[in-house]
Image 1 (tube, rainbow, N blue to C red):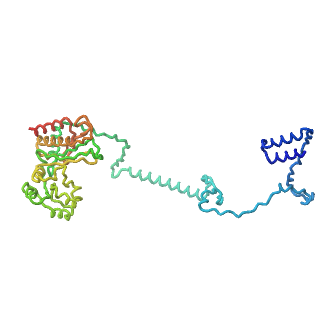
Image 2 (cartoon, rainbow, N blue to C red):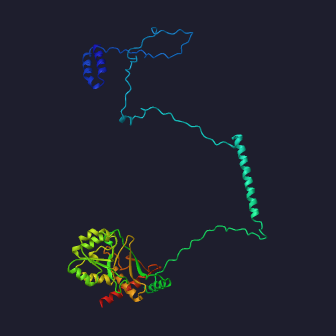
Length: 410
């Protein structure tokens, strides 16, 4: 019996059965001779429950606490220590949902428009008075209209009739068809002769190119000396000193100077007395003082355009004879003047051929197209200073450029 009690106590302390195997073997070896003890069923008392709370009645006497059986200690509720409420920090308040005071939702009464029968009597009376006023105003307007239609001094007054508004169809302008170069020059001359101007108009060319001006490798810029000039009196300024200044004066330069000319431009307030600038290479660093004045007007000397050179006399003669500089703008269009309206058609045609040839020579290398004109020259328009524009066909321009090249070769 002592072994059984030891086994039961070990089973309560050790729930793992494999640890009790040696103990079972020990008990079986000692009790092999004696019969096994009988097993008695074990019954436990039911768990006491708290009596239901009943309302106190005047008839039944209240039970005293001493008469009730006390609960075991393990079923008695232990008093919990009351801790003071915790104070949250500002960082913890961001994650605490119910730490703040509860906000009850606010409900507002629904607004309902009052019905006509619900209006007070004062408002109904005022409304009736307003209708009477409107009726009287209508009668007055009708009387005035009737008196206005009555004859005056025996003459019947005609009532003005206003036409009913109708939609006016939009008439699209017909697109201008490109014409031959010779026909375009004749139209320009005829348009200039019809409207007499106080000045001689210039024949201008506006060429739309198929390049991207934002890319540096597709910049179109160049210069050309027109065979018959531009018809303008060009004033040339030369920045040089010593023998170069003497050559410029002999070639016909209007303004020749050095540092004193630079100071005059800087202190002149933007007033310039020349249209072209030519400089020797040694004066280019000194021209940085007036670059903000000359640059925006397109007068800054540039080696690519031939205005920075040691051959001052040749540059002055070229500028005087009709040298034209052209450059693409932000909209991929080149604007240039190619002569006057009073030039002959043959002279204008040769000037246009020289310009088209220079435009083809300035074609960017990055523009990969099979033809000289396809994809490069999109549209070529000729016009006078204040006249309409005429689109010119590409084959006629190509013929003028080829004729100019043959003349130059011969």
